[in-house]
Length: 234
Image (tube, rainbow, N blue to C red; front, side):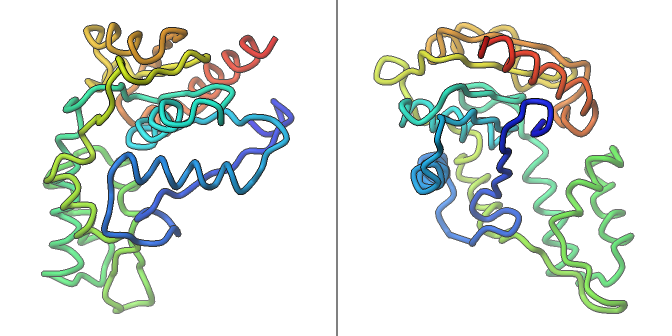
């Protein structure tokens, strides 16, 4: 993307994920505030395009609604500005990972994979989930890079599935793209009116994949994204 579009690309780890700091608060206002601070501190020469997948998609949408002056465009990948859709498997993932690293204290990543296989049959999805773990040396106990307790609590409280915004109060009138997986239940047709209330200048593009469409169909995803950006910037 960086070479094709001739621009810098920044890949951010949200709080409690990747290499970012851990914090007991995990909700969309806090996640959005983190991204807003990053944009403010970078002081970009041109307004950035914000792209997010799943929880990152809701974070990107939240930034657009909270600080519309910060962005040029916003892209939501397989999520919508509504509460409660999709995500039913995430609590199961967290539970299986916590059992693996806290109760059973596995030293072999294959054992963790087997535990995840009890709730997730897809090998690519399990491989993605396993990237959240520190494998260590041989016979070392596997540990989690991310605070599973904080993430699990946020899921149970409904913070991850929530959408704490009101279209009568705030909306984004700039260009918005919604890329959805046709085999996913996160962005069904009946939520398109909800999208329009928050993002009146929106387009929807479909990719023949599930919720993890970036991993499943990376070339198709990139083609859809870059085609839209180049067309909207012309």
